[in-house]
Image 1 (tube, rainbow, N blue to C red):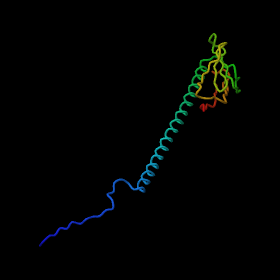
Image 2 (cartoon, rainbow, N blue to C red; image 1 turned 90 degrees about the vertical axis):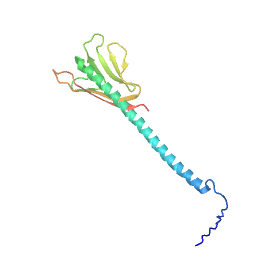
Image 3 (cartoon, one colour; image 1 turned 180 degrees about the vertical axis):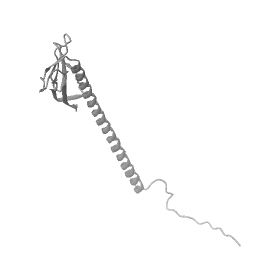
Image 4 (tube, rainbow, N blue to C red; image 1 turned 90 degrees about the horizontal axis):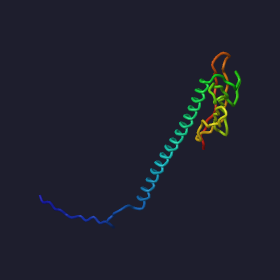
Length: 158
């Protein structure tokens, strides 16, 4: 048996190196879609982070204000205003501390202010939130310690 090897030539028009125009357009469009998807995903993550941070700030501010008012009401001797069973936008307390009577809480331009005696009012909310609808309701009963319901709306500064 005799083996014969023949050399077969493969004729090509050109030695192809690189991409065709269609391949290049396909790769560029696929890359653009992937990059667009990544950008949208990162944008939504950042937006959610900012939203969560804003909610946390508003909650912390609200809790801090409620804690401060609660502590001062508990340590006060009497509630001057609002009277028992009524509501008001101003809370006035007799603390029994010289120079701090009356201690007054009220709303001024979106900020809760606390004024002790003749001193100048001090903001107890920060400039990160805007407070509205501040309302105090005196739920005390005669002969019992003061009981005040405090409500307000806190919103972030845009």
